[in-house]
Image (cartoon, rainbow, N blue to C red; front, side, top):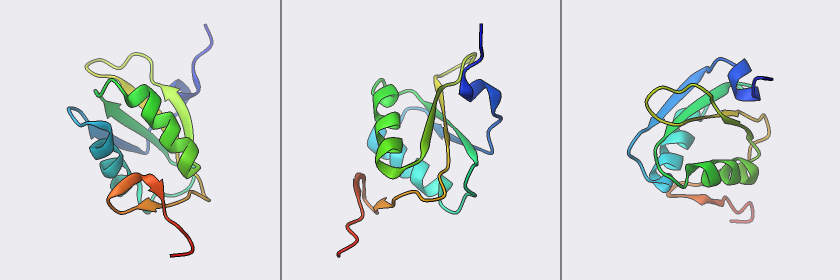
Length: 103
């Protein structure tokens, strides 16, 4: 069986979102990866059942690369993403809204 992309990359950052709903998780994720070098692999521990949908959607919106679930996570689901060099910022209190460059 071929390993998934997330299994082949060790994380440079791990964000623990255990018990957080996705909006709070995304706020924590955004804060913890701010300033990380492009190409850094991030593992996100996420127990919110919406995370498998919300994390890829957020990555698509911001330009980060969603790598998928990490197989073999012991206690809680873990998802991997890679920091993009040209990521688009989101509003301070609203991680689902891109910063409007005209304002």
